[in-house]
Image 1 (cartoon, helix red, strand yellow):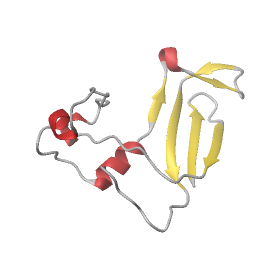
Image 2: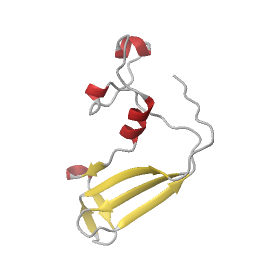
Image 3: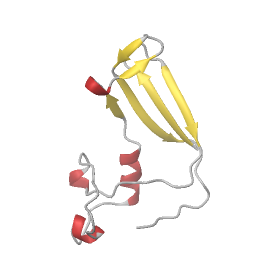
Image 4: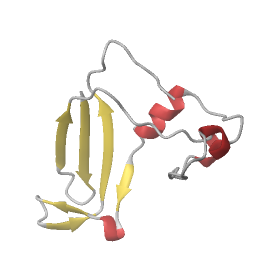
Length: 105
């Protein structure tokens, strides 16, 4: 079970949604490029896109997936508590994980 949370930065109201999951799409990024979002590149293979060696690991990719994200500017969150758009923090947490993790590249 994945828990998606959004916390208003003004009033601290918490919006929470829980979802069961069977798979996750983790971006494969180099540690030095963690702020970049990989994009589809047509027919290129994964090695052509990333080079022959990727300095990363599965734990790092899970940490990146769960990293807090600020919703601000044009991407502000409509807070029910405030009744208007506010800066907010979005986070993903694993509440219950499946007994088997299947990794596919």
